[in-house]
Image 1 (cartoon, one colour):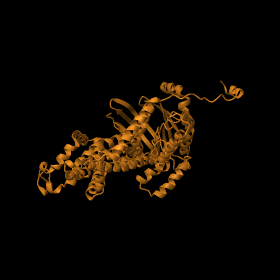
Image 2 (cartoon, chains in turn green, purple):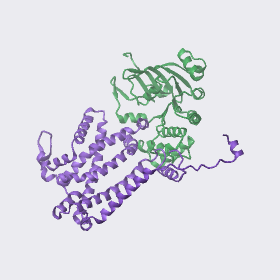
Image 3 (cartoon, chains in turn purple, blue):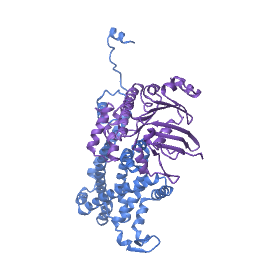
Image 4 (cartoon, chains in turn orange, purple):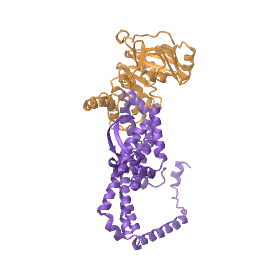
Length: 267
Length: 307
């Protein structure tokens, strides 16, 4: 691990890079889950990450917004080093407040939605901008209603999460993340907890978001979505990136045996 | 049999079976009725209860003052206990081993010794700490007071109850916080909320659903446990009753009168608890109104619905 890592953050304007991972390692105790991940995500790119369960793809996603601390390597989002400040050749941990500030430019959508059950759909969407960004309530309400409309839930602002279907809950969760006006959206298996007939409505919202130019990293098992919407496809296995390419290339003509094995099981 | 058969042969005759008899229930009901009748008879005829004596004192100034003190102590002990208990719960879950260790020790002491004994100590606090002062630890003191003058019986009773209650509330609050799904904290963090915002806006409001029912029980027991501050001594309802019968020798009437006051107060608390629980169950499963509707429809239903 002693080798030189880049000192310079990737300049956002030059390469248009949103995320850059350099040899990212992450262990839970003795178990090494990420074994050196190198990845680049351009602005406006939709990257789909696939792989068998336990391959580390969700962990990598959680490292990007510092829900997990990486053990080695470097990770930049939007030109900032995630979770640390580099000063005099040393890394300094960021304070909780600074980490929170970094997370504001990253939206995250969870497999199990994680909506706040004691708040209505509208309150879920309004919460963060009002509490965190201290924006005026009236203004936020208009924006939140517009977002609910955008995800097709204009008629549900007063519903509590428990009164919504899984697909509706996940669409509220997407609107909630968008309310913070993130530069990057992370999706952690957003349709895996849904009944099959509800998957489509969530994917449709995500597709619209991609068409609007949002930079997205999507951990998913939906190969159809990856092929149709994704700009790039990453196949991860056992903590490493096995193969990267356009979805068409990887799905039609996988270069590695592990990719072929995996695809033959899911396609 | 298929539906077509039914159409051909017409609807089968409705079942009119002989119901199962429950003789045990009739016997039990008879026993209960006799006991109730005996009790009512006792209430109206017993001289020992001396209702006239009770009526004489039930709204007397001394008793009302005792009732007021009981209510004040209950409120102070619960509010103080909840605040301190929440702090102790957060300390207990802190990553700092000194903080969580201190909280553990506090709980160990206050839950491991009887409240009555603790209150006796509070009554003699002046002997334990003769003076109280503000200054540098192990160094000079800038201001010093005599504990005997500073700590009134009311304060000693209140502090005794608060410190004890905090230990129990800490465990209740901790259980409540642990009951909230970890994903809630993650979602809040991912939205850029600070730790205190996450706790105050997201975790604690949801924890309340788990915290309120046992806390309601705590309020009820606290209301009754205030009678133990006679150990300090401080005059609340029971102590007042004792003071009265010490001169009139009518022990039972005064104690029954005190019980009636306690029953009135606890009934009010139970109603309050019901509404609090309804408030904090917002958004969980079916709403409170939906729950009520469900119960009503079950009650009015044919009785063979699945429960």
